[in-house]
Image (tube, rainbow over all chains, first blue to last red; front, side):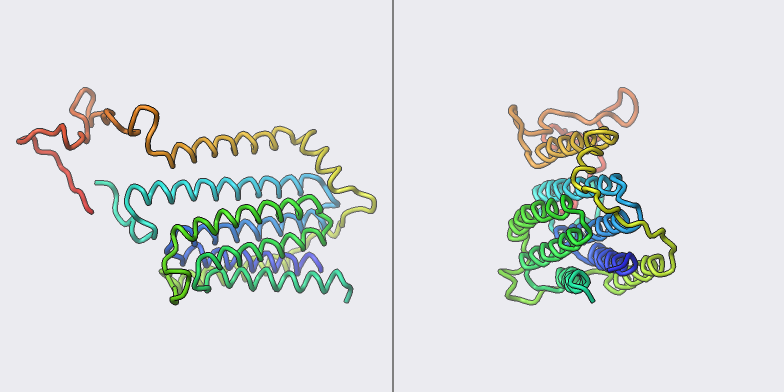
Length: 101
Length: 204
């Protein structure tokens, strides 16, 4: 378990998340891709904190902020999905291909 | 190879494999549980790295979050119970390409980058130092995150409730005119009179 292997794992999670975010049609599946990206970012932050920053507490703080970002992203994402579905009965990105007028 | 290394490699493999399965499984509920498995494996790796508080917090947070997500998956599920094959993707080749390029670029940084080797010193208590940081120097950051979460809760309630105490959200409201003092840019249809030509294009 070295910093290099940890960062490669984080890079794999971020890469899979980017694939999901760009390729999924369903809003909820798209959000799972975003969650995976944040997952990888948190792993990288903790790895740097543990192996390269001499335990500086700001590294843990960064991870806490990333967790808050993830919670906010999911709450706002679900609220927008519900609002869009109520307005247009749309649950895929393709269904929203036009502006209002 | 020490026990820590073996645990790390198993959990790293589980995290990546479950993350990949999220996007190839047929059932969206199963997808949310695969994402939960991926997060739990990352939480174990955080515990191995002595980030005790963060690892345990990730366990609790993700367990609850993925249960909520599974409920939403049932609401928006594309095929019943995942019994039919599901592959709902667009621009898949581009997405795969971008994902591989990002992975390669970040891995290159990991392999060729030079990072100082300064592990957590002996005797450092990670939870104690995090607590002193959160309620000491970085209290403003911490509290800002809290206030942002509160604002998110209010915004989520506002977005999802289409009715207020006195009726619909947009009842009786009129958009401003295109020029100062002019007609409203988009009158509600029931108040529109004949002979007055507006440009309305409604696509349903």
